[in-house]
Image 1 (cartoon, rainbow, N blue to C red):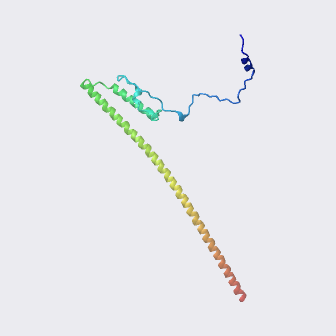
Image 2 (image 1 turned 45 degrees about the vertical axis):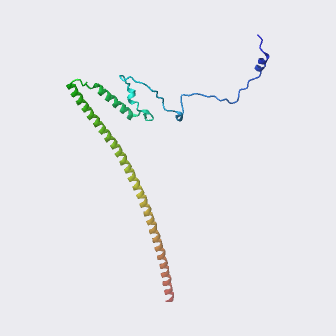
Length: 189
């Protein structure tokens, strides 16, 4: 097999690598500015078998997701409510109906008590924040009043010292005049 002479000549010429070259690397990290909202496709659900995840589908990325402890508590309460609803007796006869009614009233009272406790907790948090803000404001006012009082005290002290110095100069002046007057009287006598 005969190799063309052109290829042999081109192989003899040394290939020079450039001093710099650009390479690209793909990583698992990404810029937060480039991150988009996750894709949620449309779906159809069997009405007999609804998955639990659809009971929290009102949570969206940036509005409840990723879930914090508050959302986790709400999800847990929804699970308890669903378990309670599933555990209720059927309304087939009068006794079951009365039992179901009593259980539902008790559950409603528990829910209202929980809600009242939650409202009290929120009010206490707000009250604590308000009290701390008032204490901070009072402390700032006391500092301002103390600074103002100190400024006034310093100014009054300076005024007093100036007045005393003026009185002292006047006293020395009067004493010198009296000394000269006495000297003049002694010389004449």
